Image 1 (cartoon, rainbow, N blue to C red):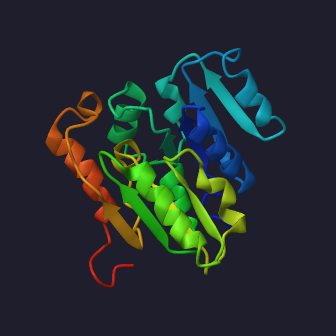
Image 2: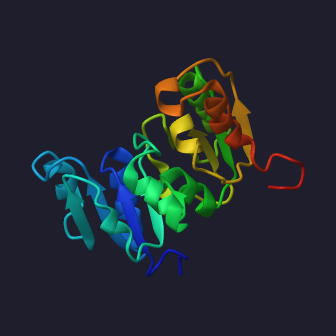
Length: 215
């Protein structure tokens, strides 16, 4: 049984990542609530694709009352950490996560994680092509556009998994990546991270667990 079964999980943002994560969490038995600032009419297509799943929607805003009884708060990549809901979750000690973290924690195959201020999509694509050339099943995704969490039940221990990760995803992650590549760090997304130090720290989180023997 998945450790998230029966847990109350709030997902903030019903974009590509939020939709895939909501489907996965509902499938493993979590009690899922999705909140988004947009209206039901604006999210009609995404909600339609999730129809039939036991998901509760709170739309038009992110009331702090969502945190009552919540075990885990999951943020889509575009959600900043300074919104009141996230600030209050941290004050209450509610853990933060996202689709990438949950995927890596459960992925049976080693994950190659790639980040950088520039070139990460190209590099992820090229590494994926090299991995495919070995003849082994290969899964390429993450920030590159394909959310991998929906493929968990199709990934075997011997597969290749290549994942592009952005600073927005990494800033709340502590997953241990088997192989990590930080291509470069130049000033970028400072409107989100505030300082170059904070941006660099977010990128550096990809390297957690890279000491010999940690993964």
